[in-house]
Image (cartoon, rainbow, N blue to C red; front, side):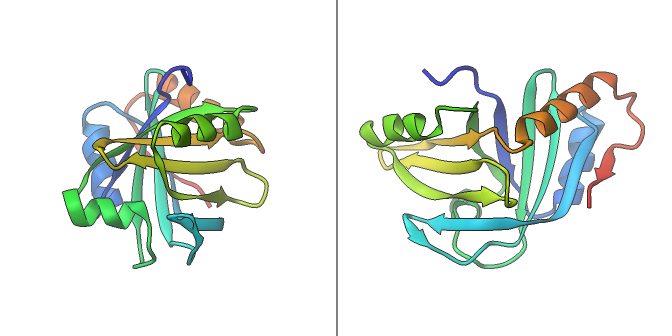
Length: 173
């Protein structure tokens, strides 16, 4: 319905440890940003405090893995997941350049609820996380791959195919 799953996102307590663990399994290099700039954020449909996030991205083949560590107590599904399940795979993501609103409407029509949404960076595309109250393991992110996001994700994917196992963490400022 939305194309292939493009990403699996994990919430973690210690992102540095998680990157090293995945690297030992051959996943990398990790594109790590310690302070992600979130410019808009809504939690359960309401304007909310911007969470302080660290995010790392790497690919295993064509599938992107995302590690997310929240560094404050602002309300978010990341915090909710850690409280309920601990460190775990939290969501699958679908990417779209031009069907973001349509995909979000389809999920809403199927009974999914907007858990949190926003934008990271002034020009980057929007993101929205949906959950279904009757399907606790079915969290879905729709990610709008505009504003350079698609190109960045492609850079991460290409780096994985060329990675020789050295320098597993690339720190992005």
